[in-house]
Image (cartoon, rainbow, N blue to C red; front, side):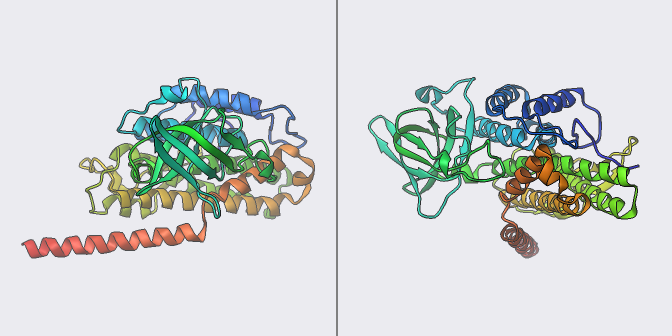
Length: 418
């Protein structure tokens, strides 16, 4: 029988004792075992989750040095507890950004160190604006930033702010005078422990991270989005387990249908995550100069699916184009964007399929009587909205059309040269 893991989540279906231990720790933090009658704990989970994030920051591979390991850690966290994954992922993303920055970052000025806990606040919103202005001592942040998750609990954050010429990334301490966090604005039923209201900055000192525009143009910008998709995958895997358990218990064709649909969707999601990890690991850091589109085409192609000896659905490998010994050393920005958006779209659609099948297979009872399961569903539904659905799918189409046009121009130029 085809099943999926109930502990460690790996992209190739192997057992991994370290990820199993990580799963157990995340479950213990969340106290949300997704079994009938499970209940969410009233205990604060933010501090232990942040402590876990700090430890993982020292041991988890960065996307540009080990994408597969990075995604497996996040997927395992999501399968254990979606809130824990939501707390850990921005911290790991922030550390990856700081590592990637080509310029020295004066973190000592804002009191940041190995024990700091980080968020990444890069969203924009209507009617609010955060500006960075230079003064004699450095830079000051002035204005309001929306969607500042856990700003009242984190020690530091990477924040985008408007400057002359565009937007620039800054590192800032949060627990200082001049920072006002509006947790009261957060009324969501999903992620109640992770308030993501706005924060006001009143001439708060900050230090630049990279040049103007670097945050959005940097090599690893797209990899952070794939990391979020890994959390979605893990969260959906926890729901799929409940569907499969119900199918085993009821032993009827309709329940089996829902289990089959959910498992097929997640098998595709795992395959695209595995293909993305392999593409990133093979290609290394994206480059600015390549425009041949080989990796973009490979990312858009279906990944091969197989069952490993343990009957766990996995990706047999990346698309054939990615197996070439002469694989180019980098991805251009367009290729990286296609790879990331394909991955996010497939995983998001798969997770939505799982939630839909769960509603039909399980009915209202677990949402009404099982606090742990209800929390997982509410968290995942809200988390998936970080993807912009049809707008992002349209963006993917535009990227593919642009890649085709670039390839056609390149072929014409080559023919003319000959």
